[in-house]
Image (cartoon, rainbow, N blue to C red; front, top):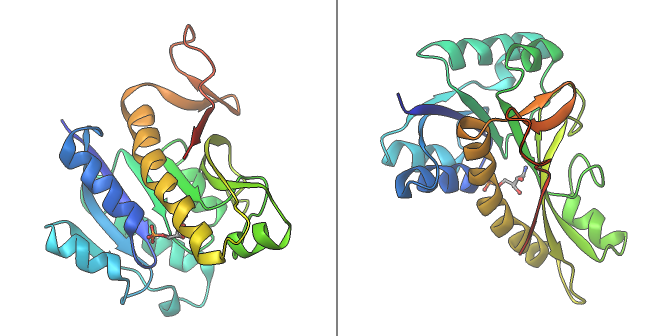
Amino acid sequence: MTAQITVLISGRGSNMQAIHQACNTGTLNARVTHVISNTGDAAGLDYAEQHGIRTSVVSHRDFARRADFDAALVKAIEQHSPPDLILLAGFMRRLTATFTSRFNGILINIHPSLLPRHPGLNTHANALACGDKWHGCSVHFVNESLDGGPLIARGIVPVFAGDTESSLADRVLSTEHRILPRIAQLVLHEGLACLDSHIKFKDSTLNHPFLYYYM
Ligand code: GRF
């Protein structure tokens, strides 16, 4: 059966679209079966609906406690057939350990910086303010620490003189769109996993897979 992906978003959803398009072109052997947003006005929901993907909104504003929001999110995710992979793609909420441990091994985030540099928000502004020569994105398994789970891959881009937050964000984003589908394929079909806290292929004869993508 085709692997099923649930994507969690909070806004535009361009990474979700890249995943969906990779499924359509066959570079990712999977289907995006569910898109969940924590905000009802996320533009990505429109794209999902237009493409016949089931959508749900679980608004964090409806819950006083983080644990209750996470419990509602678990329910939404597991309501239909549980996914093989859950991608946090521009999903702007921290998740509790109860949530992350429930989906251990199938929960992946993309973050717009070269982790562990610049976790959290405003990564492009921070990279510019720090005078970084290189910037990019990171894909990692998710645990309860903010942008701190086991790192799978990074996409690296140069920072040019004269870059603005917006020009840098665009350059990083195009790398995000290429790297996330590739990692999804590796995890779903090529045995990439976090084993004993290390990223490895389940087939131990394959090399350490830490990936760097350059723009
Ligand atoms: C991306 O840069 C993502 O890494 C970050 O927020 C941005 C969201 O983009 N967390 P999109 O919603 O996937 O278009």
